[in-house]
Each structure stands twice: as C-alpha cells, then as structure tokens.
Length: 238
Image 1 (tube, rainbow, N blue to C red):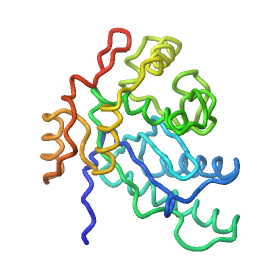
Image 2: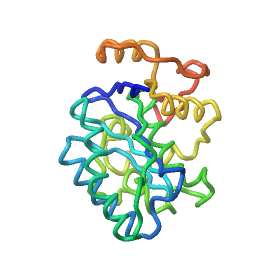
Image 3: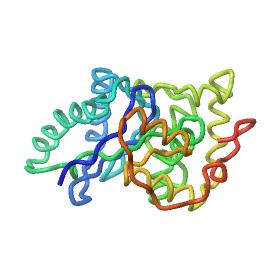
C-alpha cells in the first residue's frame, strides 16, 4: 500500500504526533524525557524546524512545528529517531521498533486554529487525568508559553506574539485560553484532521494547500463550520 502523501509547506505550522509501537510506553524515567528533549532541540535546529508547543506523554508525543522546507519535519523525526531509539535500546536492553510507523501530521491555518492547537497539545495530560492543570506537568511547553519559564526549544509564532505587546501580557492572554473549556466538536475536528492528515482550516486555506502541494486530499468527518469553533481571547477571535 503506497504511503499517504504529506502536505507540508514552508512557513505553514504543522501539528505532528508519534505514538509508541502497539501503544507501548516510550518513556520510563525522567532521564528519557530529558534525552528526547535534547535530541528534539538538536534536530529542530539542524533541520530547520521552529517548535512552538510540545507534550511528551508516556506513550506518545505531540508537537506544533513550523518547517522551513517541505521535508524539514520528516528529517526532524528521522534525526530524533536516529539517536533516541538507540538510546532506549541500550538503556533498557530492548530490540525492535520503538515507534508505531511514521509520524502523523496535518497543516494548520494559523489565524483560526494555531492557538487552539497549542492549547490542545498542552492540555493532553489534563485530559488523560495525569494532572488537573498543565502547569503541573513537567514535560510540556505550558510553563514556557504561559508562565515565561526559559525553554531553549520553544520559538514564538506570530499568532502567539499577537496576544500582547509585552511578554507578561502575552502570557496572561495565553493563560486565559485555558480558562475556556474546549467543546467536544473542537476536539473531534483536531483529532480527525490529525488522524487523516487533512489540513485544519477553512475551505479557502484547504484549497491553497492543495494548490501548493499539487494534489487533492480526502475529507474529514463533518463538523460545525470553522467560524463556530473559534474562541475569544481578549480582542482576538480564534
């Protein structure tokens, strides 16, 4: 069966996901998370990827990344895997696959969905019942984006910078995102788009991606129109 084509384009954010083989854990100890983050930083810098948000769960990872080229995200994961998989095999005396095939990913319309996707990623530990607030989960980017904690991996996107004129204002506005409960339709749309690789955005955005990629993509499960899934943060409508 041929591999499903990617729709990655330079400068367009991508929500990417990779899960452990057979949904098995890929992190067992604090050191494993730290090693992965080190390889993530090194690979992102080497292959031209700006990382805006991440979460490392026990058996999977989510990243929000803007690539500088159409192949940057693929080489990002190849770079991480080239170092992290041997580390895990040596540390835990294991063999065989660590990850369940290739990563999954879909491009994101910045204006409508970028901050919603950031929140989705950083809320993963809460939805999983591991913590009651993302600030309590060490292995995600919430502390950097919402509290200003130094993080050498995170690069601010223009949609995040537009939240305020100062770091403090941006962080406060970003924290406000997490006071608004995401509805089930919003979560379904994000998950369906990621699972299918379908661009997440309005019809105009999807057609633009098709033109740039030179190919058509499939449909996701219908949901409410894009405008009805947006949330308000201060004066911004997302």
